Amino acid sequence: MKAPKNVILTSLAALFCLLAADQIVQAQSRDGYISTLYAGPNAFPVPEMLDGRVSPELRVELAADYHAGFLKDRTANLFARVYIPLFTRRVNLTIWMPVVEWYSMTAERMQQCRLEQQAPLQGYGFGDVYVSTDMHLLTENRYRPDIALRAAIKTASGEQWDRARYFDNPGYFFDLALGKSMYIGSGGTVSAERQSEADWELRLAGSVGFLCWQTITARQDDAYQYGLQLLARQQWVSLRLSWTGYSGWMNNGDKPMVFKVQLRGHTGGLEPFIDYQYGLRDYPFHSLRVGFAYNIDIISMSKRKAAKE
Image (cartoon, rainbow, N blue to C red; front, side):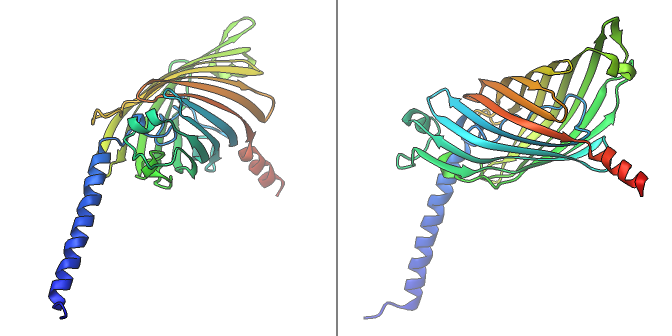
């Protein structure tokens, strides 16, 4: 005896509704854990702050990162970033991403992230792409600091949300940075206009901003962003200390705060560097970055080419 068509359709519709409801319940159960505390180190890390200036040259960075988790989990990734001047030294387009990461998780870390027991302990995946426009609004003089504004977006290109590696949700942030330098030469302090005569630059910078990302159930987590930075630089080497973070409203591990030490060498256009970062709150990782950057003054090159023509 054949079942009526409407009974079959009703049964299929009921089954679909049950499956959809199960997916919604799973999404809502994970919604409370869309934060840096319950995800990989590259999910939405604290953005590196500006110091009131932007890169005046074409700058390409390549690096390798190693993140040691507080619960013995491990992550390694390749990192790439490029700064592209937009026809002037005062505005650039910046693109960066953790290109690919390899990870190894522990049972304790999986439990903290609320992952299913059948989730693999090891794997690899590709990261999110970030794009920002950085604008140098005011240049420092004797009384005024440098002021820079940045507007950035985070894509949802990262993989393996179900393994707590990335959020798989878009985000964005805006921040304003101010910085003022003291230039020290052999005869004492030097004005900003004569900074080329100085042996040392000491710089203090601060930043504030707004950052947010989409959660699963059509809500967004809004956060205020902050940072302080101290720079000491001479001709061949520089040391930068930064305290940065952001603080969301959901109180679910969404208040990451980090301390970073950055050491850089300066040899013409080539710039080798090593960075160490420690998670002070809601970012349970020690992070080490080793790499190099190369700077090319394409603005001057374009002007010389135009003059010859």
